[in-house]
Length: 431
Image 1 (cartoon, one colour):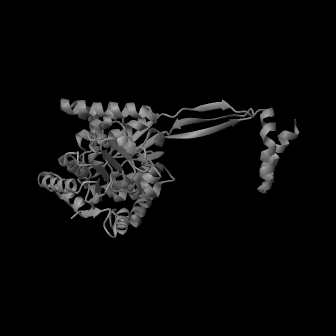
Image 2: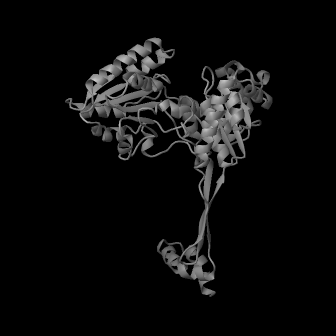
Image 3: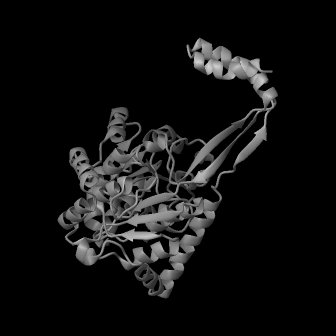
């Protein structure tokens, strides 16, 4: 059963500490396995990728084909049922519009010392995006990863996705076509991440890898970071909902289950200031679980990781929310803006009673690739700048160097670096 707590309970602080620090990642220690897979791909390239694909995805790349032909993804888009295509195009449009607003400005100016300084932004050349496959069909993840890369100006976007039995969901292919993905490869797992990071005979190495995946994919991204950039190491999904008794308990129950259905290790937490409402939400969750197609997964998640926390006043939840630093936070209250101003740590916040988290997964516009596992304390969701890098520049004329150079010489000498000092002083001496 989910955890039930009241802030006035004896031992609440200890129980909440346990909730915050609970480890929900997969139990298996996959680090050693992933390290071997990465080394295998580095040593044996395409042969290793092909062999590992036969082992894990049960298809032979040499027979089924490594890449998806461009005509296949184009046909998938053209073949979509009309209402589905309209929905996908609306999502793509809104995601693109939002992320175009994230493009950073270059800076170039002369300061008071006469030094020209600034910074210029450039996109990376190649980006790799990982999209889960198999039974999963996540066209929204394709859009959320590929469109920011496209907006940033990435030259080439390379998508990898596991294709058990060689099959890729047509909706995923359609989304890739709509988002402007340049290459689609039928490979997944840690071997796909390694291929993107180091390159093989067939696959060119990329500069950045983004996208969700299982524990092996997340660990592979962790291990190749530094060779390439990554968006984040993502863990199980999570949602915190703050709701008062003015809400429909059926709505709030659905909101909590929207994350619980992702994975048995997902987490859904409700804060409310009304005990009766808490009971009503719990009852509605049980009712919905009976008919939910994803009931097995959602039930495990809710029973093992769910929590309902009753506070005397909703303001008491503020420090608790910041400690959780959740991926998703819903504020289903009268004046959500006032509470939002006081919150420091959350991946994405959904304001008001008519803003369910699920709308952000698809069509709102902001990215749904968000930090999990309390990482919202120090990181942000995927953005255009994850596919860009900033280069600073400096230009001194003779007078500008004379204005700031002597201080640099003094500091270089203090650090015991005489060549640093000389490279400046020799120029100053020529004045």
